[in-house]
Image (cartoon, rainbow, N blue to C red; front, side, top):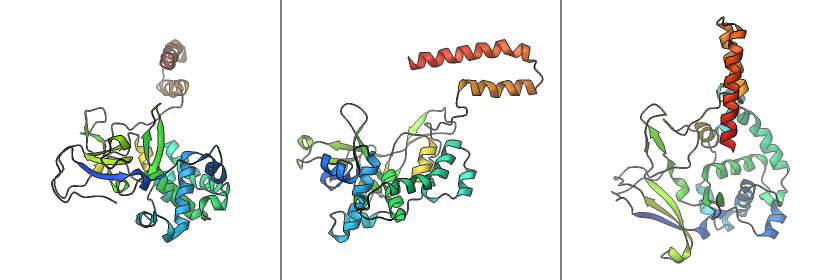
Length: 285
């Protein structure tokens, strides 16, 4: 996976235009949705179903060459980590997701009608799910959120680079990606069709990789779905406690272990709890 510049590329140059008729999207007609995945299906369920139907079609599929170029396995933590690997993950939420993934996939596969997923067995179903979760682009909807999600040939071959800091995550971040993608409407396209356009955001020297920011997120998201952790990711977050009271309880036990009397600590912790709850209410208001 990866695309390399064969010659020097100036900033602002459009590099690739892929007509969206070549993309596999999660868009389904109402009748198709009812027949294949049901009304309440998630976007990934719809996209997995459409991908697997094309896999079943084999050489008759318009996407046969594209499917042949997809990886035979995605090295994501969800797909490739063993139980022992999961135990070594120090992020509790990520470890729990890895441990429960196989059962979740088996239950999801069993809920599918065989014809809706091209008769795929569980292994192939898991493969399709990992491909969808690691290669899908989501176009912004006019009213906010994500509108259409899609697998786009060629552009999904690019590797990731996002914001990085020099060391401390609180330091200034520098963008390491050198290209961006945009969906261009038929009215604004020279070919008069909807397209995804890949454009250089900075000068790229020959032999350098084209690098795209997959999304802005924490390291556990990258680990779970892509199998790598970005270096010095300023968006990385770790949840240490599930609530204010849990955090204060932890500190309370530490203070007691150091010999501070509970009578002295009680009013301080009461004040800290009130302040924390007030700040939380203000944030949610």
